[in-house]
Image 1 (cartoon, chains in turn orange, green, blue, yellow):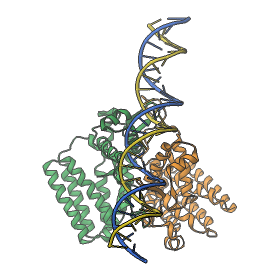
Image 2 (cartoon, each protein chain N blue to C red; image 1 turned 60 degrees about the vertical axis):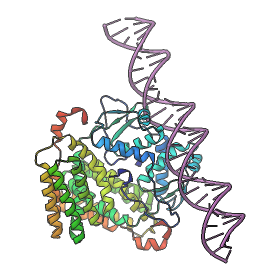
Image 3 (cartoon, chains in turn blue, yellow, cyan, green; image 1 turned 45 degrees about the vertical axis):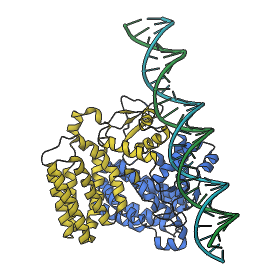
Image 4 (cartoon, rainbow over the protein chains, first blue to last red; image 1 turned 180 degrees about the vertical axis):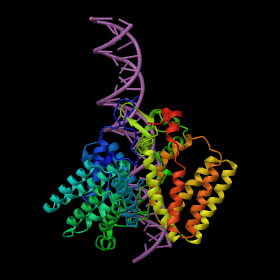
Length: 240
Length: 240
DNA sequence: GTGTGCATACTAGTATATCAATTCTACATG
DNA sequence: CATGTAGAATTGATATACTAGTATGCACAC
């Protein structure tokens, strides 16, 4: 769970001439992660005003790393910076949500197809482990942990397919969907449904059934679209 | 051609409470654009060392906006920052290129399908105008202008499909492919081939033939994959 | 009562200074 | 001659200071 480390196209992993590691964890990274989580979890609601100075004081650092973090958040569409005026937590762009779903279907459809082609028994065991944990968490009602395992499941499929970079793109796209979904009331039995859909996807991968895998993934992604119209009437200030 | 303005998920376009525009062009933006273009055009070759101080002097500004620009470039995978050591123009990550092609096929396949469904006569005229200009530029041998129109063609399809955000993702993915392609010698008649493929795609859209449109796009994207293996032997320092 | 203009109090953008970590080099030592 | 080490130099990371836009509220004219 380190969004700071994610890039659309990962850079080089090792370099003979420069034996140093690429990018250690810096103050700006830590602040980015903290703000990122607070925004996605809606602890900082859409529309909330932010101030570089105030945040800097809260973290007991200077404005410089805070500013770096805010710039990165603005690139991800999580904050809007109005020059010489102010910075606010971005409202969820409703128009972007259907598009985000389209992107997920296109990309995750491809990854799951590829995963179905080449998944090894070890890969399947990884998926099984995630599903098992997720089932337990759903029984416990641990929505936060459940969500983490949900991400892990989709990430694992991307890794199995051999497309780790795609997961970085997906994460940046998922974030707006996730923010909207956090606003929906916990629907009874939804977590169980998600586990069931994951299990079906896992089985299609195990059967190396490419078409069924894509179909199962598409169905899964369609099932979890938040009802934006309803949310918009309930939280009008949170969308735009 | 303003990569600075692009975000994966566009923020809000207007806001009742804050009538100001979102993000004016700042010094850091200008430097980012300049460095971005110099890197993509290989004016700054992979592996070239960069220094915040020197760049700041060249632009006659302080190191702060330079640093902002470099951080954004590093997120896009165009520079690698080695803490307390140095910053270099990133080598092209060969492993990322096949993945980038996969992403393009998935995303552009989807956009062209949707475009074929809903394209209006006006939309087609826009594509025709681009193809006409591109044909002229190919005759003139203007590779730079040709490349700009090539981007315009793919962007237009995304817009026609109603997925403007997808274009932002595609641009960030395309950049590594484009860098590799700049290294290939100009193949005689390749520009003509591209124009022909674009024309076919345009025709399938005009015919509202969804399947043919995707097939044509997939073929087009397969045809322009740079021969990484050959490039790697010719420019070993540029890849990793 | 309403609209306009200006003073003021903010904000983010930029510049400069300081810090800390890494690397490179030179020299002493075996 | 090889090698290890001290220290100087260079780099990015952070702190602080300053500049220039923007919004806001009040006074004043109409």
